[in-house]
Image 1 (cartoon, rainbow over the protein chains, first blue to last red):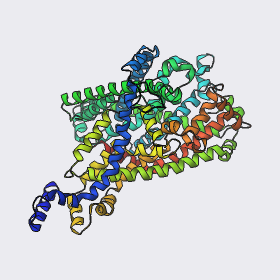
Image 2: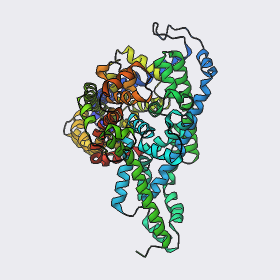
Image 3: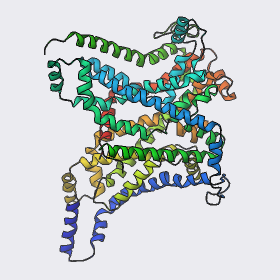
Image 4: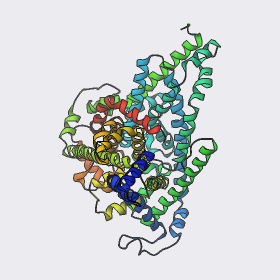
Length: 320
Length: 296
C-alpha cells in the first residue's frame, strides 16, 4: 500500500506538472483519515495523559479548592507518610501473597485442566465440560462474591454438612482472617481456570496426532505422552502467558477483594486497590492516595520492563 | 485403532470422573442459589436446601420483580449496556482503521503513545476522579462510557484485523471514486463483522458487569446500576450493623420472605441475561479470544 500510495502521489505530480505539492496532495487524499483519527487522539490525551499529569499531586499538598499547578510542592512527604504507615507492609504482603496464590493455582491449574480436557475422548462430553467451565468468566465479581458468601453461610446445607461431619460448631468462615487467602484463591480459580484453557487447547489441537500414535506404538503411557508430546507442544504459549501474568502482578483486582471483604478480616484481605479506594474516595486523602497509585505504577512499570527483558532473553518478541 | 492398554482405560475412567467433578463444582453454586430462591423460609434457614427446592414457592421472585429499586437499576443497566456498547464499539472501530494504515503519517507517534500509556497504567484513582469531576461528568453514565472507549487492547485487536484485509479490496473502491470514509463504512466494516461481533460481546458483558466506575462516579440512587444494587442487597445481611442504609434494605425487602431467598432471587435475576445469551454467543467469545492472541 505504501508504494502504491507513493506511485499515486508521483503520478499526480507528473500529470499536474507541479513540484513540492506532494504534502498537499497527501493531505487531500487522506484528510478524512485524519478526521477519523482525531476523536481517538483527543480521547487518548484526555483519558490517558491528563490523569498522568494529575499524578503530580502525589508530590503536592493538594485539596479541591485550588488547582494542581497552584498547590505547594512538598517533595516526598506523602511517600514518607505512606511508607511509615504500619499498614503499608501488611497490605503489600496481602497483595503479593494473593498474586502468588493466583499465579500457582490459576496459571498452573489452567494448564493441567487444559491437558485433562484434551484427553477426554467423547467430543460431546468435552464440549459440555468446556461450555460449563468457561461460564463463570462472564459473571461479575459481585455475583461470584455473592455466590461464595451464600455458600459459606453457616446455615447453608453444604457448610452444615461439613461442620457436622467434622463435629465442630458452625461458624462463618468468611469472618476469620486466616481463611481469606484460601477463599479468594478458590474463587479466582473457580472463575478463571476454565477460560484460561482456551489458548492451550488451541495450541494442543495443532499437535500432530501421529506423534501420539507413534508414542503409543513405542509403548509410552498416557502420562509419558503428556510429558513428552503435549507439554512441549504448548511450551511457547505457556512461557508467554507466564510472562504476561508476571507483568500484571501488582493489579489484584479491586472487585474480587472488595466483594469478598468485610471489616472483620481487613488484616488479611486489604490489598493496594481496596486500600487506595478507602484512602482516596472514602476519606478524600487525595495526595496520599495518589502517592500510593504512583508507587504502584512505578513497581508495575519495573515488572513490565523485567518481563520484556526476560522475554527477549528467551528469544521471544518483546514489548518495546 | 489398536486396543487400549489397561493404563489408558484407568486414565480415561479417572479423567472422565474428574471432569464430572469439575462440572459439579462449577454448577453447584448456581443450582443451590436457584433452589434457595424457590424454597420456603424455614427450609432454607435449617439448611435443608441443596440443589432442588424444598417447600416450593416463587414468592421471592414475585417480590424481586415488583421491587421498584430492582426494576429501576435493572432498567438503568439495560439502557447503559446498550448505549455504552454502541458508542464504544463504534468509536474503537473507527479509531482503529486509520491506525491500521502503515503509510499514514503520525501513526508511529499515536501507537507509541498508546504503548506508553499502557505501561504507565491509567493514572491512579484520584487523578481520574478529578478529571471526571472537572468535566462535570459525575453522576452521568458518560463518565463510565468515555474513558472505557479508549480500550487499547481492543483497538490493537481491531487494527490487526483490518490489516488482514487485502489492500486490493480498498484500492478497487478508491478507484471507483470512494473516499476513505465511504470505503470504511461500505467495505471494511461489513468484512470485519466477525471480530466486531466478538468485541461487541465482550464490551456488552463488561458494561453489564460494570461495578467499580459505577461505585465511584454514580452516587445518585436514581441512576444506580444493577451490580451496585446487587452488592447492597448481598452486603445487607453479612454485616447487619454496618450502616443504617444496610438495615433499611433488610427491613424493606424481608417483611415476609426470608432474606436468603430474596438475595438468591436477586442474584439469579441479575445473572439470567448473561446465562441466557451465553450458550448462543460462546463461539464468538472464543474466536474473539483467538483474534486477540495474534500479536502483530
